[in-house]
Image 1 (cartoon, each protein chain N blue to C red):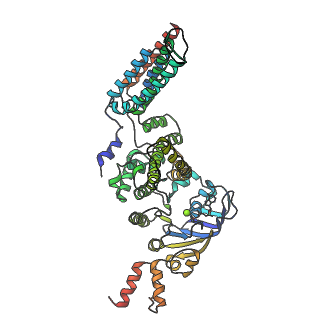
Image 2: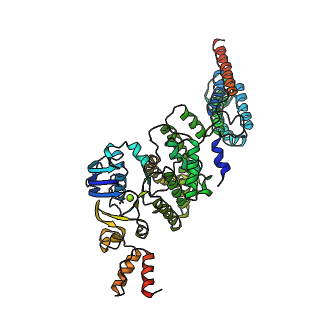
Image 3: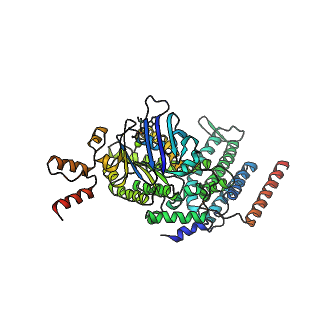
Length: 282
Length: 261
Ligand SMILES: Nc1ncnc2c1ncn2[C@@H]1O[C@H](COP(=O)(O)OP(=O)(O)O)[C@@H](O)[C@H]1O
Ligand SMILES: [Mg+2]
């Protein structure tokens, strides 16, 4: 089943000249993880806003074409309901903390309070999420005093607690160190295994290669390349679109050049290892 | 996992202190009365008694240290300033002394004493309330009374952003110092090093506010229907209600007696 479909969509922010999104078409299926990549300013965040219905409900401007979220035209959705339906996590860990709760436990509960969940069920749900994300050590801490990585994990927990089927994640690790990045991606993996539909904007293509089912490449507001992760991330044209290839793909191409090519272009480290193992026969 | 902490949310939040555990609005009521009495009576002796009473309440709610820390300094500063201003400039018959062109009169001193103690007493009410009540408790009660949670959110997050701004400016000052800019010592140095940080500080705060709105939207802040509360306060007991009504009656009686009498 399609969970979101985008048909001939163009969008222009108010008071701007050019279109930030141009003639987009895509069918997004339930339960898949979509990687969205592209250079800075290519329209990734704008695309996220479109998928969440923030365009046209929060951002005015000119929207043409149609977006259907679960078969309903985005224009006909109650925007307040939509924001409870589609989770959203973004770059800045600091602005995602509410600033009105004194403990992490209460911070995670905030979304559920807003949804009007009864206390007993609410507490059980928060405990569940704390265990899932291994935040036990943080629950009594003041969320305002956490490190960036910890704040981002709490932001994830707060959104996951609300149990949305669709989650939009916009560059979640661009301000984090490698260790926190790994923690965040293990959370994203959990969500994948729970069958959530995930939209993931991420610059680190190696991580996109690991975690997404399909990849969409944006350039100047247009989809210039899309399809299965394997297809897209092994395509040399990416370099013209301001995107790096995964290290594994680069290595595969280098080996090709050296006349030692692998059976196919690998996109993840484990694929490379597998192919080399086969070649040397271990 | 600390289940004792988690289970504390299942019961009303209490601090096991009779004054602190009063409903935030009951506390407000009592403290307002204390602040109004010196305004009505207009005698410095009464103000002083009220001020002493604040200390008593602060001690009884084991907040004496926090209260004194803020209040003593504030009271001395505001009190002496107001007293001196009034004492020097209010004209009168009964001259106490002359210093240059200044004439200090008994009337001036009396007036200064009365006015300074009055303002200090009113400030005390504010300080006492702020150390004896958590802002989030007051907001919780107000929300239950029908104040929209957008309003309580704005108030609570503004309080937090004051703290954030403080931390942020400390951080910027430290990096200024690391770059060799003088941030300490003479007042002029401090001011000179402080102004350049105001720009980034406030621009940052403004540009964050749209993101913050989006983040809160993602947390179902505008979800239709009534929200619930993880924390709950003790319901107002019958005895608390009756005592409060009694206090208010006595107070109204007192006012009427003052006005008529
Ligand atoms: N709120 C806005 N108002 C006007 N223009 C915007 C706004 N947000 C983004 N843009 C413009 O839209 C284009 C795409 O931006 P964005 O979606 O943020 O790109 P990305 O997330 O890929 O870096 C850019 O040219 C940017 O300047
Ligand atoms: Mg972006």
